[in-house]
Amino acid sequence: MENLARLVTNAAHKRGGDLLNVIYQLMINSSDQSIKELFANLLERASEPYFGILKKWIFHGTLEDHFDEFIVKENKECKKEAIENDLNDRYW
Image 1 (cartoon, helix red, strand yellow):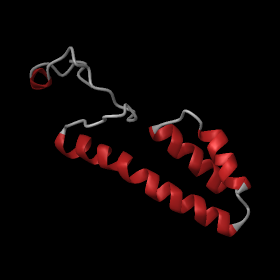
Image 2: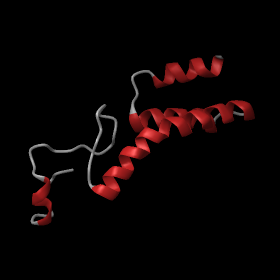
Image 3: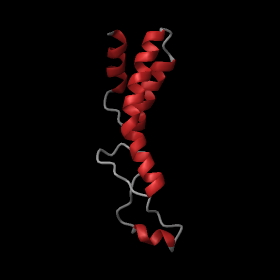
């Protein structure tokens, strides 16, 4: 329980990649193999939604980030269609 309490304390108000980083750091800094496995499992499960967003962004050019967790942000003031004509457009 002590390790989960550390996770809750360290992860307070963190989202997206920051949260994944907290879990990863706890995993690699643990000397107990069963605790490493616990954090590895949590990391794997917590990564699924993040990597789902990443895949859609990379392969389809769409960003579905309903909770504002992803590292890339969409600039609503720019039009996506303008990217083909102006590579300096700051859509992402």
